[in-house]
Image 1 (cartoon, helix red, strand yellow):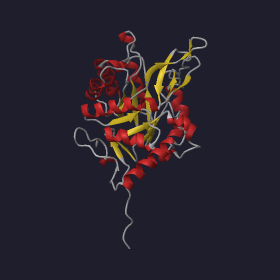
Image 2 (cartoon, helix red, strand yellow):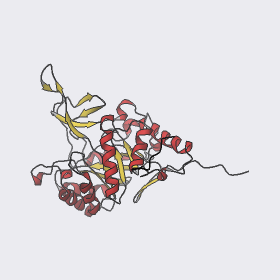
Image 3 (cartoon, helix red, strand yellow):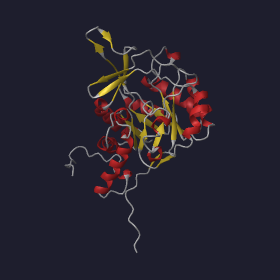
Image 4 (cartoon, rainbow, N blue to C red):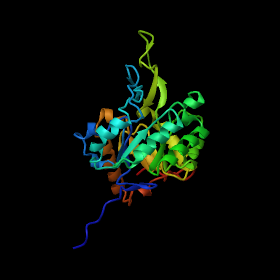
Length: 317
């Protein structure tokens, strides 16, 4: 009897990090993984990225911290988290048994804080890599975002790289004039990959009281409304760097994820969609596999960066 024909391969490589499929759960939308364990089999995920982690615990911003918007949501959680010591002690025992690669998202206010975080995480068993959230104020530069200046990005990623040999992915902000130089700075500083986009800064107003709906006044906009911006920036960055790009922003179904892959992303992250459908990431994985099967494509790598531009246009089939 002949051997059973294998289906398309969903496996991808982000530099030194191998994933069984290109779909990760985004930081801040998936807690510490355990919150979703009774809803979906975490082993189905390409990986999960933990809630942003700081050296010390943070209480976050005052409420209200969430606001629904047309095609998305605003959040001003304020990076509430348990801090690194409690994370290692209380969260890692479960995460070691998650069945998928676990990446830890970190943030800080100085280059030294990022480096210290990375160094301490590097020694913890069960962590596959680090995502560096650089959309934070740089206290040494008067509070401007690290992510807004290529020089600041180079400095903070360089310091972080010196502190660890682990897989390192820089998470980029869309709140910049030109994202390509930012991505190149991260690459030159030693990042293994870049992920984009983080949320866009926005706000909402209650016209009855003429007050801001969010307690912090402004917050981060996510959801389907930002997908066109995310796609454009991923396409730009994929042409500007040689390291892998991970697409984020408005992914709620397989079609959205496929757009990012075609634009040049090697993998994607599903974020806000988890709030309306906790099984969103698994459905995206299944949808990508169905797409590849129906078109007789060998694997995900065959569509990454396959966008046709200029005169070379074909209709979808």
